[in-house]
Length: 114
Image (cartoon, rainbow, N blue to C red):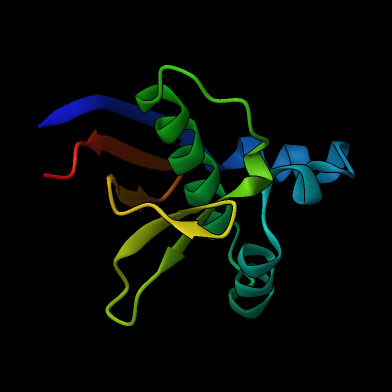
């Protein structure tokens, strides 16, 4: 059963702007593992997609009192994204991410585990 859904679309240039104007943006919004992966890839779309996914996840939850950097969007060996919150795998939160040229989109669904 789906308990909540969320979707977010983001222009990649917004993240570029935040990187230039807000020094704390990286550490406030991304986990250590996400930042390590970003530095390996050197791809701004990677950061933008994670930011959009976190926004989508917030929209699925009725209450959430954690910081952005406590949510991690990581990828399994096949490239499929999965969600970790405060170092705990959250299989009940499903996420899908896509990007094309200037925009990223992310959708999240909160399901009840039977």
